[in-house]
Length: 72
Image (cartoon, rainbow, N blue to C red; front, side):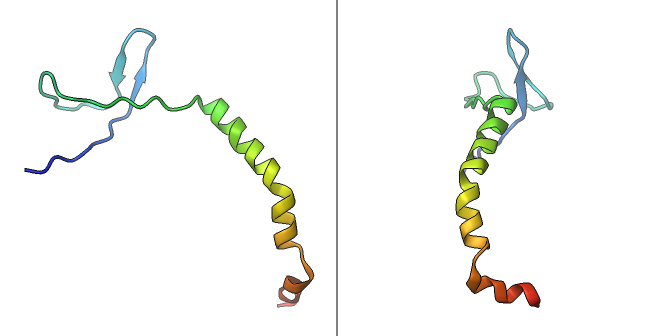
């Protein structure tokens, strides 16, 4: 029988990991825990990546060859 990986939302309350939904787990069930990046830090990295990409996007989107599409 093939087993399927299941993602279960959870959070850490400062003492223990708590599942956010009810799940029927057998004793000693094997689990993988993935710690997600802090949302604020993640958004900061996204903003930085977008800022670094702006000159490239400007070059790609704002060029004479594509100006013909501005009048369609």
